[in-house]
Length: 208
Image 1: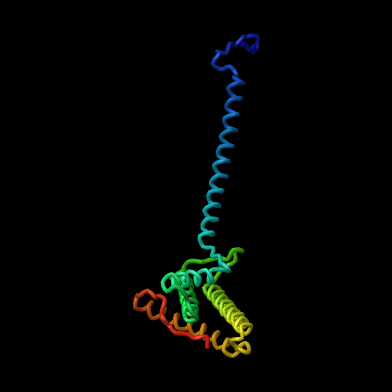
Image 2: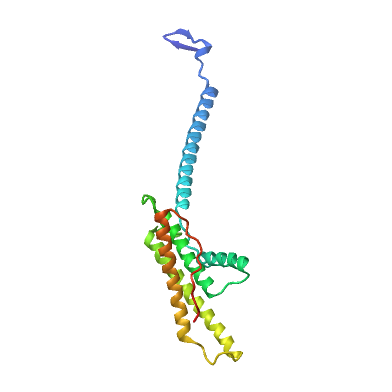
């Protein structure tokens, strides 16, 4: 290539030739690097979001509607396997122990006082929220057991064994479940202080 200045030709060496192909490749590489850095940033953000989500899931507590009944059923299953059957006292003991076991799980969760837990909707969950839930579950259990006692009484009436539903006795039966709850919570607190595990007891509760 030559450029004429004042009629004097100037010859440029080939090394200074304008390499459009080379510049095109450089621009392409720069664009690819920008896309690469952008992708890395997006991956990093996704990773952080995933960690935040996993952390939130770790501290999300699902209050199952069957948690109490499942715990009680497992205890009664062990009683039946050991004794062949279970009676009213066994049911009351199983319910009292179930309450204490679930209460212990709640206390353990909030033991250090630094961690925060959440409900499934993402709102903050407190220890008192969980205790209120457990109390409600126990009330539902007592209502269920009283209903079962009433159904049994109706069957006894149909067989001619009793003249009427013993309403007063059924209410007393419900109070024995509250007594069982208090007994096992007292046992739980005593054993927490001594470091002993709290287990099923043979407290006697009558349906009469």
